[in-house]
Amino acid sequence: MESIQVRATPGHYECRSGVLQELPRLLQEGSFEKVFILSGHHSWEAAQEYFPDLSGFHTAYSTYSGECSETEIARQAELASIHDADLILGVGGGKVLDVAKAVGHEVNKDVALVPTLASTCAATTPLSVKYSDEGEFITYTIFPRSTYLVLVEPEILLQSPIAYLRAGIGDTLAKWYEARALIEGLPSTPLSVQLAYEVAKSCRDVLVKDGEQAVFDQQRGHLSDAFTRVIETNLLSGGMVGGLGDRYGRIAGAHSIHNGLTHVAEAHSFLHGEKVAYGILVQLVLEGEWAEVRGLFSFYEQIGLPLSLESLGVASANVEGVGDVIAEYATKEGESIHFPTASPVSKSDVVEAILGLEALQLTLS
Image (tube, rainbow, N blue to C red; front, side):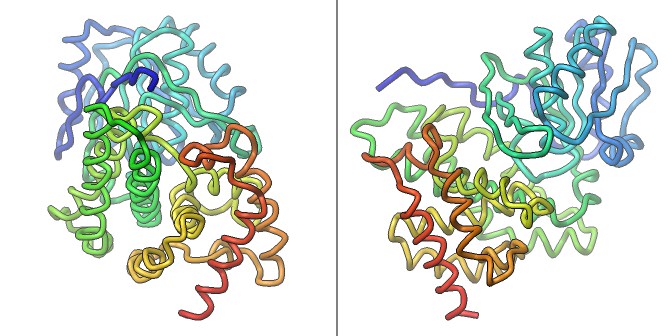
């Protein structure tokens, strides 16, 4: 087995109400003076009222284009260099944070992150998922060092659109199913990978136990223990799985199906975690775990996650053709769907799994 590189968590992580008021002190302790703040329009609107006075620092603000692409990373890196920034501060959802991490890597500066959504583990993972300017998945890049600082203000997440919490539950649930597929077949398991396995299992346990309550509480605007446990599972525990397990704790079949879905026009309006949640079901069918698929159906219905291609906007008449497109991209050489298997997963295997899942969903609806 190749060596495992462990970057379990950011250098400093806090999640509590009012935590952003600590930002000036934390920046001073890190000897940061010039801060490049990268955010989206909606992200900054959501976070601005919680931010402290940063007039004691040289700050520059930049709005990202809406995609984590090489074009956007290069543009923002140039702006950060012009500002001579010594810290990149990303404020927003997963793609904003991924751009911020990539910019930090390009200009060789530390990165601080303030998530405004609990839809992915981007805040705590030392990697960026990269797309084309049109939003099609290209690759992901793992960085050699962890994020310097992550501050989570739960009130911001409580006020975010509820679809993002649902998507985060879907994305984080995949940590268990993908890590299980990657780890259980290993001839030997290093300690860090064992820890990744246990954290992945805890992700599933927390989400199944508290996910529905967290969604209900957010709908009521109630900052409950269940809501806090779920957002921290999405943000922190989800990131720790890959941080501890390295390639054995990152992605497998579910994310390959997501990558295929990025090439389906009908699914472009759906969130990353919604596509990954559907990918979990396809992965389980490929594994022959039909009972587990049936068991997840009721949980998906409670949370509001997609059970079929039709629930991802694909007309029933187009399911077979769309399944063919997904399978073509999901089974490309180097895709993570092949990682847990002794031999490559074929395109026809994936098409058959997709059609089988559609048929099962019809019998249970």
